[in-house]
Length: 175
Picture 1 (cartoon, rainbow, N blue to C red):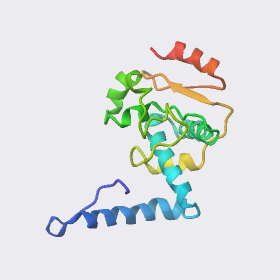
Picture 2: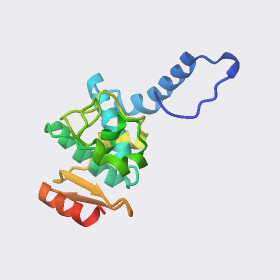
Picture 3: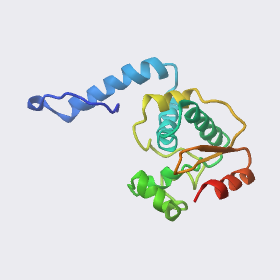
Picture 4: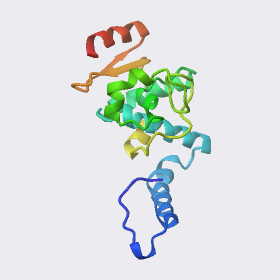
């Protein structure tokens, strides 16, 4: 369902009218121009991955978002855990800010969304991603990186090829 501002006549409003409008907009803005040649399974994976990307890279430039898309996609395709912190908090309906303050409490929780406990995508997208996040998921920038993090004060992204490099970045940039 495409998130947007919809003008609905309250005199003849029904949920099905709103849903139909959202589906029509999704078809015209996302499906037809970007996903028409994809299988149903690919569409679900792309939108799901883009929803994670939306939260993981929402303060970054387009190239940074595409780099993070590559890392997440590469992890998924190689049966690694995606390790997106925001998914650890999603089942508990925490805001992004609440998640940042308490993510360590939820990292090991086993549920249908936590990508830090299984090698999968969540059972559904965690939000409706923007067009830019879907485009980034479709056109990632290939790198040798497997890890990323960002300084939560400056939003600068730091990348690493190995877990050892990633741990060094964590000690330097996460306070």
